[in-house]
Image (tube, rainbow, N blue to C red; front, side, top):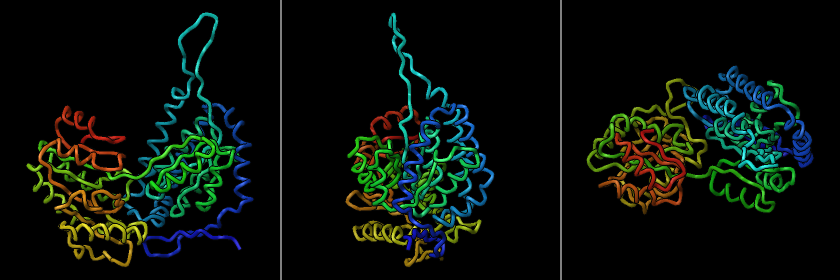
Amino acid sequence: MLDIQRTISPIDGSVYVERPLATPTEIEQHLQRAKNAQSTWQATSLEKRAEICDGMVQYMLAHVDDIAEELTWQMGRPIRYTPFEITGGLQERARHMIAIAEKSLADIATEPKDGFIRFIRREPLGTVLILAPWNYPYLTAVNTIVPALLAGNTVIIKHSDQTPLVAERYVEAFREAGIPDGVIQYLHTTHADVAKVIDDERIDFVAFTGSVAGGHAVQMAASKRFIGTGMELGGKDPAYVRADVSLQHAIENVVDGAFFNSGQSCCGIERIYVHVDVYDDFVDGAVALAKQYMLGNPLEPNTTLGPMVRKRAADFARQQVQDAIGQGARALIDPNLFPADDANSPYMAPQILVDVHHEMRVMTEESFAPIVGIMKVQDDEEAIRLMNDSRFGLTASIWTQDVDAALDIGNRVQTGTWVMNR
């Protein structure tokens, strides 16, 4: 009997998708098909590869309503927001990468030398394994699928078992666009089999978005063969609200940055530092705005906050909140204001904590939930110190009307990306 992968919908706990896991024979066939298809795909003109990638985008846009509903069922984001992952993010990113492909992949001229013709040529690596997450499953995957294919690589997608239909949609979209057989495929498989695939000599690069623990596992598997990896892992992203901020703009956008997608965003805001001069007004505004969220069935158009992806994820966040309260934090939002809040389910009310500090898990561990702690700071120096007091460094935001101050602070914050007023 085949092993079955089941996707449990956070909406109602029902089994929404069942798929057989790939057998060893099927995995072998996928790897060999990708290997066999790569040289012909590399020889295909860039113009044709770009045309096929654009055809994928057209398919996604034509099917956006169906895609949005099945995505909401799989991971719980409110249906009022889900289509924008396709119509906004996927479309914008894919078409940008298509537009810059010719320049980005062109030969690089080097210093001239008499009697020589010298240049650097960018060549495809071979077959790229893409391991994609559930929280923004189309957006995170397009970041690697499209450039890998444009560069002449073949692709195998392994999506989270929470969103397996995303991988299937991608492959269907490219097939409809006319991509040759074997150039892009998907696998539904176990973590143990993923490690075996990474260890296979027919895989030439691994792109992974997910947890720190998952990143360690991928890196260890890849290190046996010295192949490259590209990773986006965990975050505990800080926001700093300066005294000169446009306060209402900051309140609206910082709260959205913390609670959108039920806080399940790679680059979501997970800790907030506010200058003493605007602290009280910011907290009052943030609490008032958070209370306006509508927690409930994400298929209902009025819902603005859906369930978390799994009950255990909500349990983890609830425990962070309780631990913080036990250490003296104050919770400013009464969960009873949200009738759908249920400790025995993934439905969790938003929560804002004050009187927090860095001895609390909620300020140091990734929460990935609609909870956030707010700390008062006296000046930029204290804010920078606290922002840097983290083992994570994914993104950070600075809220101010002073561009020069933002540049100075951003240069001193230890983060991969920082943004101003975003």
